[in-house]
Image 1: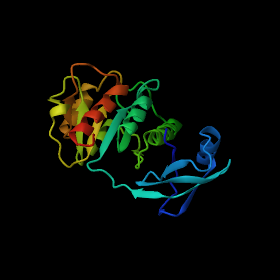
Image 2: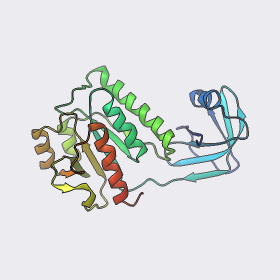
Image 3: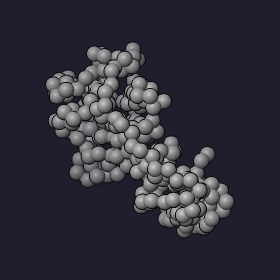
Length: 242
């Protein structure tokens, strides 16, 4: 497995420079992954920069590499966002993890009418922090140069307002269009996934009135944890990313 770590404070680096990890990332690299001097390590900053090279220092507090390769990856366009309704258990978290690995550029937590899980009070910040941590680990797992944003929790009315500036696609087993045949343009895409009980009729009506389209994946009815990632896989193929 490739050794990939994140340092969001890394602004720039060139071949020949030395880049040092510290704190929890360095401790994980040295004590868990047991990286030794001479092993190749890759470090990204989550904003497109990825550097790699052999470790020249590996102790419990620091891991330093000498850069032999440095690449600044451009952001992709259009951007793909997963709007994930809050769901019971860890189903929404599973969706966020898989969506990150599948290339989502951002995730939006949605407090849908039928969401059993509720983020209220202190749970709002705690829930977003939890999703952010999941996204960060999934970025490292999938060796992604760009780290997706975790946006603020939205209500259905706030979600409807986002339909004016992007292509909003509502996943619905009875959707009007098959996602695999939908024509895409240069607008960013918001894939909206409802909770366990689906999107409530009044919510669907509000979002469609705001410009959203209902789309279907196939005959099967997928769980809220798998519908979004499945849709992102289709979009990746349609956009030529895969």
